[in-house]
Length: 178
Image (cartoon, rainbow, N blue to C red; front, side):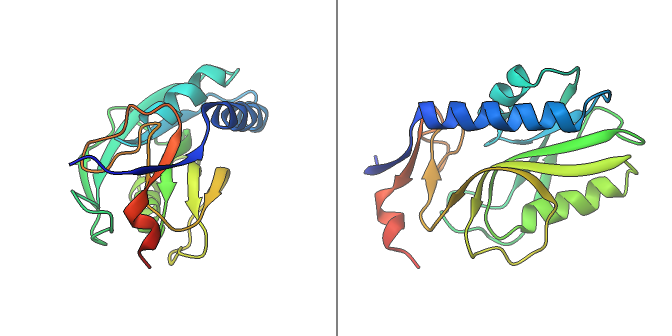
């Protein structure tokens, strides 16, 4: 079943903001070689664009988690499906998320990766949900704030659909949910 979509952010707005974030990251990590860790699957487009715009040497790795399945509401249970390949002990680490809702996934990853003793651990997210966050997280770089509604496009999906959209949109029916 296809869903009706409501436009949220254009490609041009996303590109401008990603370039701004990349500039800040390049400045903050100057003379360092950070590891950018993309949280799969939703962050892969954001991470790709961010990586190409970061002007300093850096490495990229991925970790895959699951908390939504085929729902628009998080289950509240975070599972790691794919772990890192790179060693992060003593490294500058930047977790790259697509969206932070309650903060549970990011908080879980921060705790899990902190146990591996990185030199520093910060987070970047394309989107952060307003007013919904229940767990403290270390978001250092934020693309945009988002209100209620389930967001798709630019790598974000609903049941593995809509990742291919170049901009961001809401599932129309999700805008009526609490």
